[in-house]
Length: 329
Ligand code: RIB
Image (cartoon, rainbow, N blue to C red; front, side, top):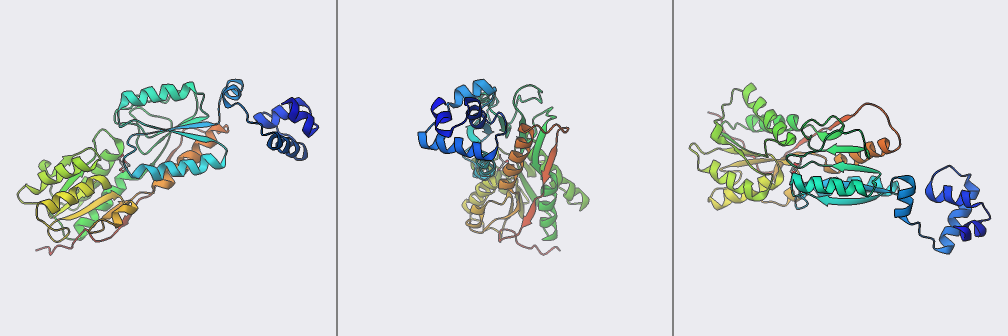
């Protein structure tokens, strides 16, 4: 620091203010300090800086399933915001395990993060505590959460999926839902059931299979649906991984999609354009979900004091080739 001050021709205090961003410094002086920093190849010690400021330039993000192709888009939205604001993202994967999530939460806080973004696991212990770094929840709401949250309109998305199947003439419908204690899964199912009820389309309990938002459980749930009599003419899978599992089950049952069984999904990831047939889906904007949550977190980190915010992004129906029209007799 002394060498920087000497080279830049400024005081030690000015160098410290520029490097630690602890006060605004007039542009010509700030520029001279940054040029000296670069010339001398100075690397601030983030840990000692963190101890001094009681926070680092790290943002922690916790996701529930790193193998689910939905989450990279969400993380990318966060990373684009964080990097542009000189924050560095640390990513933790919980495998939907609440104990692992609690461990990560505790460890991340010990590194004095500037903020935390959490896509909570199934039974998250996260609470809206006031102390500690700002926290924004994404995609799902932990029980009792009253803090900032950014999600999509899951209930409306489930409603759209059912309306489309009904308009395409389907009356014998099966559902593969996500884990019911996850708010996004519960909301999608609730919206779907609301549309069936409005159209007086009955659905027996055995036609509603609860699965785990992954391909294997989507496959086994679809097999159970396909063995029911009457066999459903259409299946709503509440995320793309389960829909892809259902597609495999249809094919292995020597049936054709959509000729014998239509499938509609939720997420609408680009990879579902490559399935055969390309999946019709309720699209949710994963990148925008992450970007919006990160912007809200940075506002909090920069002192936004408003009451907790709930941001809900829209979904949209993306029609491709996996739903056939039925002749309603
Ligand atoms: O985590 C499983 C699901 O939750 C994802 O596929 C996406 O639908 C998210 O909302």
